[in-house]
Image: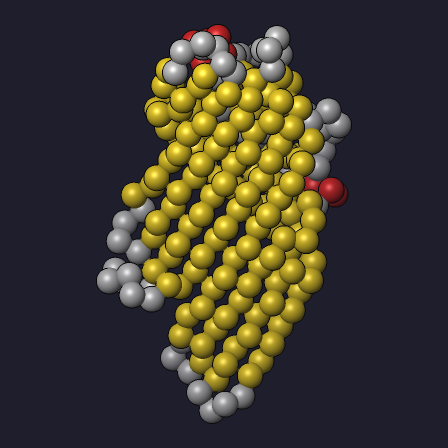
Length: 199
């Protein structure tokens, strides 16, 4: 089981596996994988309103703060010799698709995750016929050196020891309103270090 929690100025990622996952090092076996990931980031927000009379309004916020979140829950994780991977395809109804993939590696002494990389791709459609896309979200995040948790069977992100090695994040949104068309993008700038706590 993996789990993570974000509380106020703290970014924590729990990566908790059941015993058989930690010790499945030889054969290809499938296991459960559950969790939530939170990362506080700063994005460049750019918005444009195109009115039907031809006028435009723009609003930019190059340092918008937000927290991105990915929920993970699957019974189809594969692990072989400490390397694990999986995919989660969510049935979000007729107007939303979401796919989460993850891969990582447990150290030989089983005391840390050497790395875990998580991708999340979301497509939101304007109507159930799926002819027009309203919003897309693309996320890739990689974490390294995550030590074993002091309780339970798993691993937990620890500030100052673990590392958020890379983050890619992009949101693209377009929707027509009654008198204008709204467009905005959010692109990753950096991790919000002020929201990172001691643990």
